[in-house]
Length: 312
Image (cartoon, rainbow, N blue to C red):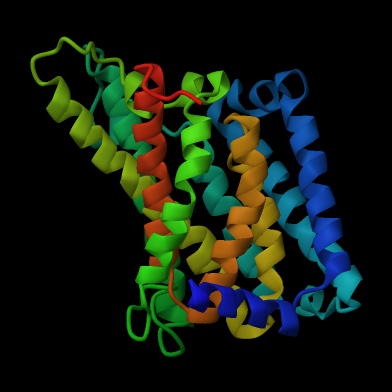
């Protein structure tokens, strides 16, 4: 735990700017208010056809990411990044790739063919969760291969010199909060995710189906962690230093729209913590441990909450 505190302390001393933090947090708060007002997010984006979804995701993510970059530039009195072609290219990739990833692309059709049987919902969710491999990992690998492979590991896939114990301690500290979440109705409406795979609990292979789904569900967190803390932080860091951390946090908020409000708000601070860790260690494995651990603990506490085992 001392290691994590040291990383945060060093970031605070060297790079933290209160005005930049306030302005970007204010932008994130404004986006949350708009998104959750009268289900605006669902109506404006999720209920649209695919091409419209992608375009509107680009709008949303562009406002969050580029808007936060501009606000931070104003606070730090440094707007030189706007003259960099590399910044524009990386920003385009950061926005467009996740816009495609977030849209309702029929991955299940591409992977499994047309499917109208009892496994439709399951295969659709499996296809979606695996979609990050094609829309995030592979395109970012291509960029890294041509632009960065001589300069750094593949955006955070580094284990040398990284201690994993502090991340398990950090994960343990989250347990009381997740216990509380397991008692909240809006949390239990969303989790556990396996209850929404469209398979009856009486199915003869239900435990195996749930195990398969949870495994694939977990892979999506690895893709997401790689993209936000690996690609966005470390691809930008080579030329722009710490300046992608706060914009990433605001961007990270937007991919939680539609989830419980408390989870969305906390994603800003969680993104900041994991972003600083990735930036200082040049590794995303700590973030993967925390992210996957929280995801699976949320599933566990939601299961216990629905079963009536959690009480204050």
